[in-house]
Every structure is written in C-alpha cells, then in structure tokens.
Length: 141
Image (cartoon, rainbow, N blue to C red; front, side, top):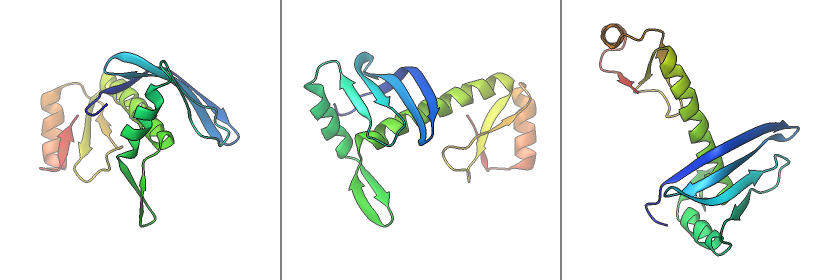
C-alpha cells in the first residue's frame, strides 16, 4: 500500500448534535476500496472494505504515520486519516469554486489550509497587484 494514491468520491455529510457525520467511497490507485462512514455520534469511523482482508493492510499503512498531540507522539488512526482525506477533499472543492470567481493565492506565512481570492480573472493584473501589495510573499495556486 506504500505510495498509494487515495481519493474519495460520493461524499455525503450531515450535522448531528455531536458535530457531524459523513460517508464516502474510498478509492486506492483508482480502484474502489471501501465505504467509509462516521455516523457523527462520537464513535469510531467504520471502514467497510470491498475485500475484508484489506482492512488490516490499511490499518498498518495508516499507523506508520505519527501524530503529535500535547507533546506526545501517537500512531495515526483510521479516524484521523479519514478525517484528513475528507478535509482535503472539501478544501479542494472550495478552492475550485473560488478559482471560478478569481485568482486564488496564499501568502507564504499562511497556514496550509488558508487561501485567498482576488476577484479578477486577469492574471497580469493579479500579479501586478500581488507584487505591489505582497512582494516576494505570495504563491498563486
């Protein structure tokens, strides 16, 4: 599973009193791998693999990554991994919508989940503005 490409499709989200839930299809290297569900009521994520034997290899793959929390290091869990995939999917969706309205950029000091939009579609005008306002401190995305 090393160097595999993970993608998600068929995303559904909903609100609950305990946050929110989601369900999506997980694809690995372009092939459907599992249906992932978080019911949004505080339990763990459910990963229903197409072939039941694949779940253990997914758990082993995910646990090789580490998470820092309050000064301690832990193995990444399926819950965290699936939440990260969903967050990345939703961020890309927002970015694509923003790009329809204008030029998307980020300052080099922005966190990885932040982007900004200039409401102009002319790249030359956008670069001139950004060069004047944020010289050497931006990246067009």
